[in-house]
Length: 319
Length: 305
Image (cartoon, rainbow over all chains, first blue to last red; front, top):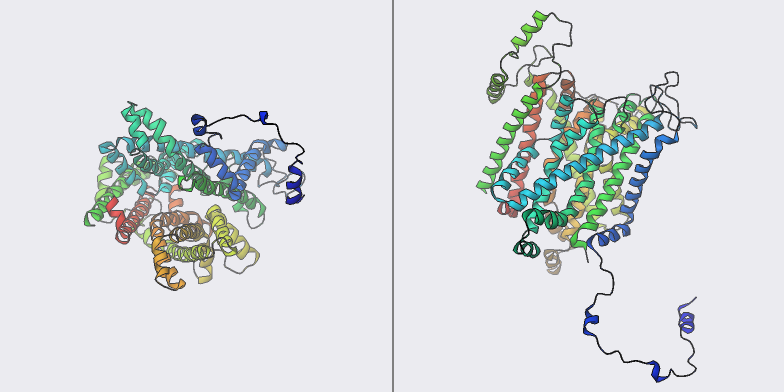
């Protein structure tokens, strides 16, 4: 339908004039003029809308969700167990029986890959959330109270952050022993530092804002101001940083497993799968390629999502 | 400025001291000991422990170690009999430093170029191509890049030697794999900075006063955009350094990273300690240099701190 025909059909032919009594004088209502007609867009709705418009970030989000779904249902789709050895059935190629083939001990790689996804994703998400939590609390306190407390905390962070975290993580892993919990623990000890620094910077800026002054004059407690005003308002930065630290944790787990101090075999993780695959790379390259692709795709999706979130949550971008 | 530098130096010294202390006591907590792996007579084991001073109180060992450290003596390796940690460091550092410097130069130069090209061709094909490279570089861990390169170019195509660090051709793959992440980081940062800077008033002024587009780009845009890239050089060196742990393993390069990993697995206390102290000090000093450099280049930094 062309624009012209639409105009023609939308205006009905006027046959007789509308009688006068059908009109009513409404006048001007001052209150109604000021009323907000449309629903308000909150910061988060606005951010979500902007994120949805960003096709690359949406693709990242979808990939990530797919990965999580596969981590949940993947192992159920095959009758094989991730840790049972079938020594008469080693290094099978991909087939309808074993979708990703089998490894050096005859274990089904499809099952191992998705159980490994559970382990690696859990390490990534848990480590990132613990880091964010500690970082937000410490950074919030340091930034809000300032003075001596802030100085002590910040000097401590300055000192600790200059020490390469990988060295600490490696040492802690060796001392505490291999496993999922030690990995998360060793990440938590080193990972919160940069988050605390970031949150402190945010809080320092925010606490000079008028609404914080108003809250203080109205008698709000420090805890209320920190948790109700300062932290929610710096959450954007925290979320972006959190998203970016998940792939970091996944990478570090893979790294540790590769040098032999990551999760404890036979528990599969992507790092351990890559490590196993790397040892037979020359003959059975798919055994490395599968975990390598899974790690890379997950890191890619999280990076894309993180970039999109940064743009979506940046108040400067808000129009 | 002097106050700023002094403050940074003091923090760095404190950092190194904390690092040495924490690692010393952490390393002593390592399970197992270097002498139990071999079937040796208890008497000999005791003698060895006494020889290395490991029977003395821990605090005394600590002060002895600090004292030796101040004289630049990192002690003897517990596993490689008769070799000092200094000697191990001396042999292996050359490989790691060579690889690290090449990777740093390669990744920074190519990263800057990609970032500049992407920004100048903003929202065009070249921009998307550069950013795809950058996103892949950030997402593919160095060890995966290393294995994939090794498989394609050494095992399948046989164009490059699969391992070692001898001829120029053998250095290509390790440097590529190690530098990829940093390349991507620098490219993304440079592109973002270039696009930030392009809207600034001084660019308009430069255009208005009649400079050629080339001069505006090189003298004003690139110069100002490159500043923040200096700040990521500290973390970049740290990433490259830890990257050597696996890259050296993949390509069988006898560098520090490989020694570090193997000495942990061998419970070689003094070597772990020595290498950690060296790694840490090296990085702290690198960060110090970057901080001071940045303070010199950008006066706003030293005022705000």
